[in-house]
Image 1 (cartoon, helix red, strand yellow):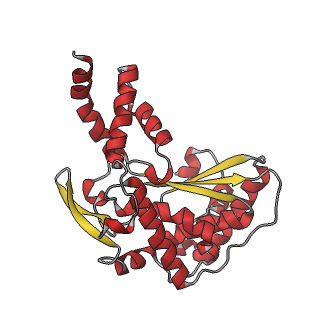
Image 2 (cartoon, rainbow, N blue to C red):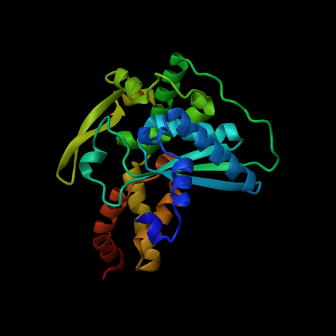
Image 3 (tube, rainbow, N blue to C red):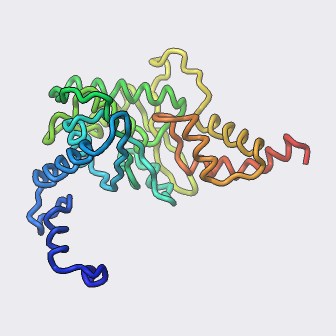
Length: 281
């Protein structure tokens, strides 16, 4: 039906099945075939992309192994991996945000950069268990300190990925190292899970067991900083779209400080009253 609708012949479908980058046992494509096809695609994109330009790749698979494979394919091709951004579902459930060991739901955006001069591909070094554990713990501490508030697990794992890539974690396709396992082992040591409630759903967020391990932890919580940005945007323009607010927040708070749409929507709900109080109307 698909081929008929597109007015193609049968060879078109055969080409799609042969070249589609997918892990599908029915198509006789195991993980190794998937990674090989993915690497070939990156090589083609690297060839046609102009120097000093960016490649943004989006995909939906929340499996850590697939993200590992994707970033590894890009790095080994010659791209500089710069950041990963998780775009949650349009209407994420509060329950999914509060899962202390859940998986990310929604889309992942990976940004790669092609340098001006083609340099030799730097293959990341193998990473041992102790080094991996230290990177995960130190990065989580830095993230929580910068956000200055209890944080969902989804945000934590999406922030750690780029750090691990730069440190060399993505040099191995088959590895037993796992962020989830490391964080579980450090519960009641550096970290604790704090009960919370969002929109009627109950769950837990990650925070420090003892904030004394972080010197000068006096930042304003990220939620309050987002509210201030939303307030300034509304005060300046009076009427704004959600996209305009999202752009302002994302620009002011990039990377680890990127907020989720839920907190922005919550801030917008309380803005009319604050604007009336500020303007006297």
